[in-house]
Length: 413
Image (cartoon, rainbow, N blue to C red; front, side, top):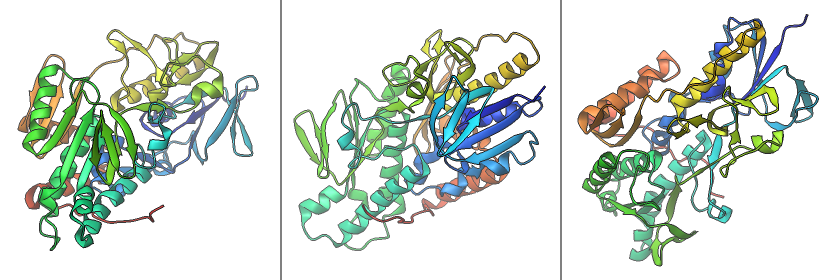
């Protein structure tokens, strides 16, 4: 009897957890990803704001699985899935599977306004982060040589659309970049006069957090001189800025952190999905009608006592580990138990020595929450090298107020 083949699509938190969880199982694991690296997305905003370099939060997938003898890595992008023949198509190649784990994540969504994307990039990949970093730093450079005061003011105005953790973290990091790291780098402009605006369509920022912590976050942002506009949806976005309600805000740098849409997994499988494109899965994370196919991470809508499992890194890792145990049980002829999500809390940092944490039973804010946030993120980085690099960079930035990754790369399209 041939060894079952498990094909895992996606090398993020869920996909990597699934692959590693099958290390001692009698299966052949094939992990496919369009990138050759695993990315620690929670710190991607720090790459976008010149706090860290991409190599400090990413690691080659092959290196991570090099000691796992039953695992192989393929660089490629899935085009489609043939559920009848049990095949995935990667370009001209067809790869068969006995079990298929789809951990393809999500991208930013513009709620029907795809024409806004060129003017307001989102933050999901390393390329997104380096493009945002380029736009932010280039805005200061262009303002330095601009002679028209109105245009200069627009160049020094930054609008972040979306008041979730990513938006809050971006806003805090950009204002600190302007007021601390860049203050002595320019001669004609004063970077500390930069205007940073955070726009949230709902009634408050961090809507997934308790209201008290949301209020703390808003107050902390305002203390840093970030303008917080809640209950104010963006109605237009172009190269010159945004419209909030009927008010036009001139800004040459607009960043999108307002929503996500799942990868096209539902279309590949012809499966039922929710409004965000997430596949509605069974309690064992399998696709209805296809017990050999599992969808995990941001691509899956998973029922939970408090609604649906959130699209956060701990949830993705739990799903990946659970699917590995489920496949192991099925290979051994055992019946797996349903998936149960454990909520370890929500964390968001607002800036230097400012953060909020919701553990459910305990809520923290301020300096202590910031230290716990930092320790948790360093701990969950993928390798000891990355942990040491990030810890050193943060210590250096904390002591000197400097950011060492202020590189303008890429070409303007």
